[in-house]
Image 1 (cartoon, helix red, strand yellow):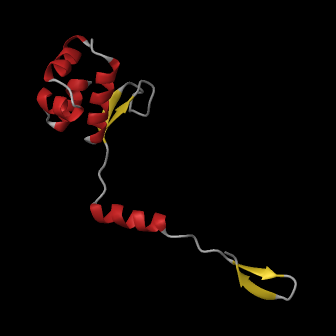
Image 2 (cartoon, one colour; image 1 turned 180 degrees about the vertical axis):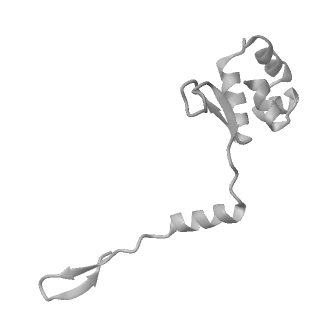
Image 3 (tube, rainbow, N blue to C red; image 1 turned 90 degrees about the horizontal axis):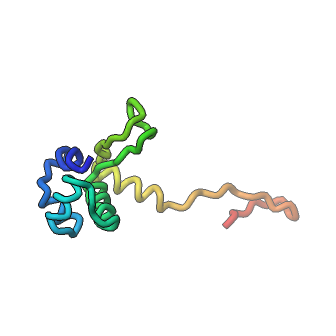
Amino acid sequence: MSRAARALLKWKPQQLATAAGLDVSVVESFEDDGIVAPASVEAMLEALRGAGLEFIAAGGQSLDGGPGLRTIPKREPEVAAAEEVVELEEPLLPPAVNDSNDTIDQVT
């Protein structure tokens, strides 16, 4: 999976090592025999996820239910900025009726 992930990104082992903050020998060892510290695996996963990859576990939502990976669609910067503005706006509250004198007050 590591080699496939690098292939999707067109990364050499050194690029993954740099992105993960590891020595290239750790990446090579992981891809050759899978024996590295769990923290190193996590660092590589985070680097690959940060580069836009999503890992699919066995039984996840892939075409045949098997493990895999895919790229995460990137949003256009303008769309992302607009979505942030919408999320920051406060919802409008409906007016409330004050039963004591039949006037309409804004709920705050």
